[in-house]
Each structure stands twice: as structure tokens, then as C-alpha cells.
Length: 371
Image 1 (cartoon, rainbow, N blue to C red):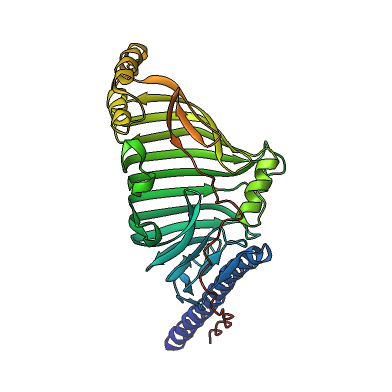
Image 2 (image 1 turned 60 degrees about the horizontal axis):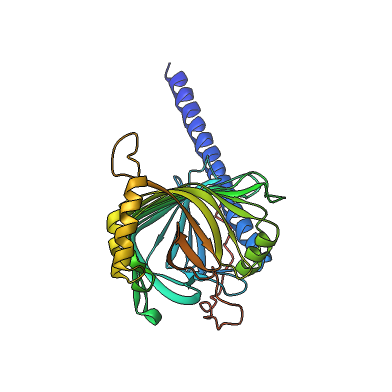
């Protein structure tokens, strides 16, 4: 009896050891697969000319969640149209799901971005920068979800600041890239709550945009090259941005719209949208204050617009169906010019801000094998 119990104990111990060894092997396989996917993604973008650097890369987390950390990551457009440098970028995944990663980016973020036709250095901090990215087995990004909370940005060169209470972004890509202008290259869902614009971009409606939500589909091939080259190629191939849903509450103006956007020869947005606008009276008052229209014209327009406005079926403020358009760098709400719109990128001959200095990348050492 004692002999049988001993044999049973040995069998149990052997099974535990074999199971632990198998799990350790599987964990390291999953960790290696995850590292390979990240490395392939970086190599792919580097081949396209983008600069992706980091000071150090490490893998850890055994025996639970696999974690990859990039210390001081730096991304930059090949032509210097934008760049970003962060503190740490952390990627984590369960070993049984090595193609779906959680990500977080702590610390201060330094960037050079196009703003109103200029390349402007900015610095930002946020209470939360987190997301989820899912790749297919070939390393192609299929979906990414990013959440930002309490983001504060400053651009000292413009004496400007930007604040966002909360923003969520979902980017999805089909299994195959677009080949012709009717194919979908990517889809975007965006929600921004509590946006305080820089004073230079505020316009007659003020600095505070309470709510913005957008659903858009990028149609047409968007090559993986520098941003200017990609935008010009996308434009020349007939690419468009299809926007089935846009909702903005900016100052007194509440706008819902759907339409299409493209780029003109100077990379300025050219758009045509069908919109419904509420808050007409207060919007006209804001335009008068900004001296965009005369008070007498505003009074006449107000009377006419209110006669044409309709109360939504579910109730609420009267809405006016009115086209929103952008052409030749001007934005119009119906016949009213709301302001100018700059190119997406500054003119090519304009001086650019150099991207952050490169840092030295180190190759990840192979993880130690389990005993």
C-alpha cells in the first residue's frame, strides 16, 4: 500500500514537472512570437524610410503576462513632416494570444506636428495613454484602440496650449491594402470630449469644443512612405475620405454632418457635407462679435434661418439643413464664410523642425531557457 502511494506521489510530481516545463516552453514561444511581431513591424516601417529608434528593449513577465518595454522610443516621418519621442512604451500580451497587445505610454511626449500650415514642436503629458493593438499572423495591424485622458499640450514657439479631457480612437485595417480608389484602406472612429483649442485656431466660436465624434473611411491606396509623398499619391489616385458621421458641439453651434473630403493641389482639404445645425441665433451673434457679418445682416439672416429650421422628430433645438463646404482654402457654412483652412502640411519649401536626435537601439537578448 505504501509502495503504491509512493508511486502515485512520484507520478503526480512527474506530471507537475512536465506540465510546468511544457508551460514554460509555451510561454517562451509566445514571448518570442510577440517579440518577432514587434520586430517585424519595426523593420517593415524602417524599410519604408521611417525612423523608429529606442534606447533599450526588454522582455519579461514570466510566468504570466508577456511584457515588452521600449525605453525612450522615437518615431519620425522620412521627410520630417512629423516626429514623436516618448518616455517608455510598454506592450503586454497573454502568452496564449501573442498577436493582441495592450499598450501604455507613460511620461512626457515630445512631438513635431503640422499645425495651421507650420511644423511646430509640442510637448504633452497625460494622466492616461493606453490602448489595444491587434495584428494578424503576418504582422499586419488589424485594429488599434487608443484612449487618452487629461492631456495637456504646449507649443512654446506659438505661445499656445491645448487640452483634451478625454479622447478615444479606433483604427481598423482590412486584411489587404487598397488597390484602387474605391477600396477601403482604413477606417477611423474618433471621440473627443472637452477640447480646448489654441487661441490661434479658435475662430469666432471660441476655444472650447465640448464634443466631437467622427466616423470615417479612408478610400484609395495610401502608400507607406513619407507623409507628404503618401498624401500626394493618395490625392492623385483619386483617394477620398468618406465621412458617414460627424458631430460637433463648438461653442453655441451644434452640427451633425455627412459627406466627403479630398485634398487639392496645395494639400488643403476640399469638402462637401450635408449638415444640420442648431444654435443658430447664438452662432450668428458670435459671427457679429467676430466682425464676420454686420449686425443688420445677422438679424435678417436670423429671421430667415429660423423660418427654415425644423425641430428634430425626437425634440430639441430647431435645426437648419445647410451645406458645409471647403474650397480654395475657405470654409463656408451655407453662404457664410467661417474662416480659412490651411494645408495639411506646410509648403515644401518652408523650413522644417528637425526630428529628435536618434538614440542607439540594442538587440534583444534571447530569453533564458527554463530548467
